[in-house]
Amino acid sequence: MLHTQTAASPERRTAALAGLRAYQDAPRATPRKPAPARFRKGTAQVRDYAPRGSSGHPVLFVPSLINPPHILDLLPDRSLLRWLAAQGHRPFLLDWGTPSPDRALDIDAHVERILLPLIAKFDRPPVLVGYCLGGTMALAAAIRSRVAGLALVAAPWRFAGLGSAARSDIAQLWSAARPVCERMGLVPMEVLQSGFWRLDPARTIAKYETFAQTDPVSPAFRQFVAMEDWANAGAPLPFAAGRQLFEDFVAQDRPGSGDWSLSGTPITPDALDCPSVDFVSRNDRIVPAATAANLADRRDLGAGHVGMIVGSGAQTQLWEPLSDWLNSLPGPK
Image 1 (cartoon, rainbow, N blue to C red):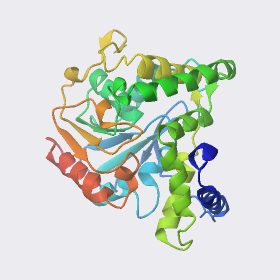
Image 2: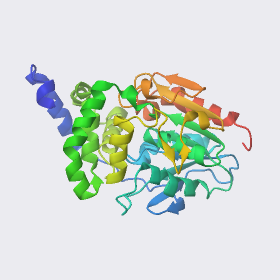
Image 3: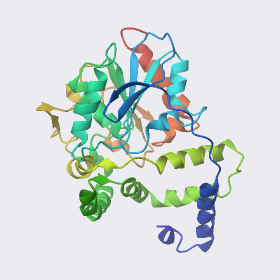
Image 4: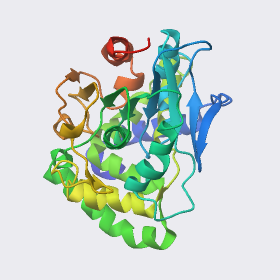
């Protein structure tokens, strides 16, 4: 990818490699202790960020199965969860943990055997906030359980909206990786990450060129390292979850075509019977706006897939509107 993108410019290649070296050599702070686990189900845990004595709706954040969940609590000054807690909300974070020993645990089973039982443990129906693929799963859970509301954030539903070129690239990637993944019983993060790189290879190279010029003592340097460490981390998926993602969702678009069901229950946005909102990025290269579920209350943002969570404009574009929406829900505040 580096060779292709910089074939006409050795200077750009040198800059990108310098940025990569700066990232590799950057000092890392001691990882923060994770928030305490409130509930557990198998290897999954629900981490408690709620302020002591708070009494409003519990708000359960459901991240993607891909990449670690701490993008929602990236740094002390870039933490959606801690910011919401400071506003008086009761946020909780689902940490999917390491892959289940059950390699046959597909996306459906993650919803039915992990997410739904955890929802049932709360003292009152929670609000679900699903990010990326976690939003796809949260929508299914909201149909299959009693919840106080559903917020989708950069959540894909109409996978045909990825576009024919991207879906073809992903299909080629999965065709090459599938035999080894099936033998392993797992889909390694490297397979998934290479797929993300294919979505916008020019930007992948350009960000390292820019990083080569970033002041090592600046907040921008620290945030870049934290974001890249997050993006390059993550437990592998059980093979069945990866197979369903690549074949049933991306290739066949079962959610978007109305052909997805759980235990005989059709999973379609029309079946939602709780307050809901859909935060959609117009600049998202990973989950394009065309993939959105298009809920009745759709809020379009001008930030990217990760930028809407931790970018410089995240508080204005997402955090504050999400907080206002949570405050508007009926019931305990």
